[in-house]
Length: 149
Image (cartoon, rainbow, N blue to C red):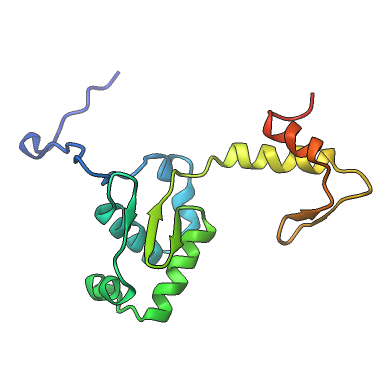
């Protein structure tokens, strides 16, 4: 096993007391590939300014000012925010942002698969949005409990 050596031991990274770290699964599970560089810059900013629960409350104008290298407008910030929300990295309820636990893609995929297999002629799925209707509660309970045997 190769021993890793620090390049600059005097600047060894320590976890801050607040919520300021990046989950390595973002790269390891290839989640980072689903986002634009601009939205990842916003994500890094939100990670940096969040409290112990990942919550921050910077205004749109303040975020645009602080990320001036991106030349953001309030509209483009909203687009980046929606990208992160769609990717389940953050939640937003004006004026609060919350950095979320990274999604577990395997669990989500298994859940969708079990739900689809549990459906009968009474339910339908829109594959574009993955929304379903008229699904029996028993099928949902089975999916949450780990799937059907």
